[in-house]
View 1 (cartoon, rainbow, N blue to C red):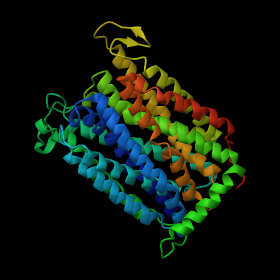
View 2 (view 1 turned 120 degrees about the vertical axis):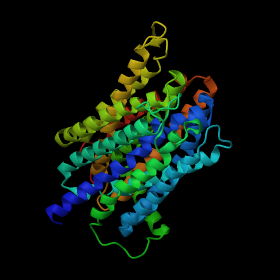
View 3 (view 1 turned 60 degrees about the vertical axis):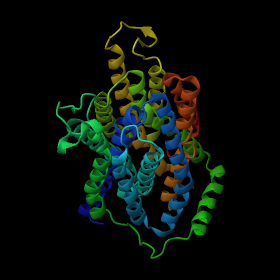
Length: 444
């Protein structure tokens, strides 16, 4: 592969992060999630619980399918075909959210298409991440991963700014720019905010063009799809090898826990601030922009630190930061910060949440970029996609855990603050398991 072709391949690969990030930024966290809690369902506690159970169910689907599909792709080399298939699911799921009208009844069709798009995004990510080792030498993988993740955050920020500036309306029917939603969208039916679904789908279609133009397979592609029984046999061999690779097993367990906790923060951050502090969609959007900007900067810087020191120190530092932030979050209310009472109407609780959001965005961005670099170090050669499938399984086998625990604890306690506490335990357990992870990986 020529230098020009390799550079294009790297740039095209990075564009997947740029194209796909709005599903997380706009739909899962900052616009659709809070809109669902405040408008589609008018009870924030019940909405947080329902949303948590739905996202948890999607996690079960991903957990069951990811390792098998990864083994099939490793055996056949058909990564691009799978990416195209799940990209279509992403686009259809996102676009269908246009029909999430206020006070919709029933809500299950809305949650079904949301989760379908989420599954499409996650599965496409598995096959895209598996291409990482072919993008450069081992010592450059961390920098490439960090830069790609930073570009993803840039995409999230730009998409969020456009949505807030021109489409998502506040309580009085205007956008962040003080204007009605663009294209004559009716603010009374929340059409500007509902446009977030089609907008996310269109964003993905446009910005995946460089990926499909410049990214090509690095080895021959089989003409036929690998049978499931063959994939299961390969997967079985890998699973049987785990006792001989305790560092790899510990990393899968640690990442399972801390990524589940991080996804819980991302998924419920907007819903939490809407219910506890009474923030509007626009307020939450500004919060999201701040978190995404710090995430982009930290992912880029973390990639450089990854190249210099390796991924494990970056991961440990980020998990420790997120654990601390999670503990602080539950101490902030409209009337208190760190459990210390503040004057009624004080802006301090809002300021505190902006700072906490910046820390979550920064630590989360660097953590996720270095986590996929660490996976490349610990996985056996020739089983990279399968390894990322197991990585997804490790993340999704308990992907239901944080949402379901948050949903159950919130429902039982009747408090959104208490409902966030399970995240603290997940980060703690993940940090403990990292002790057994070898920084340079281990022999296959």
